[in-house]
Length: 55
Ligand SMILES: [Zn+2]
Image 1: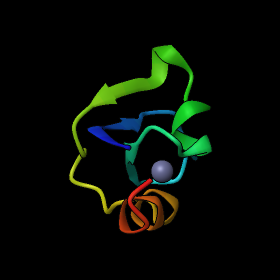
Image 2: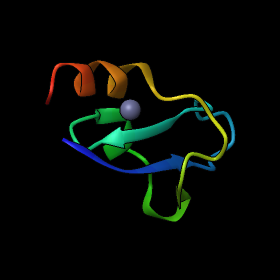
Image 3: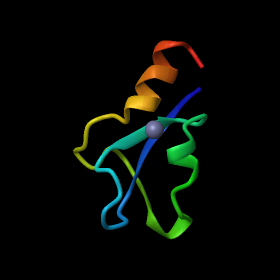
């Protein structure tokens, strides 16, 4: 489901934000690299699809 946006500050991580708790990329972000918000980045493609499917 759709949740609050977060993004990863890890160098070389995709510069996207995530807002769906079923996104594996989101769930693989190491805790120390997680930041709240969008970071001014575009939404992750996978999250966008999950949101559109209502998952
Ligand atoms: Zn995502």
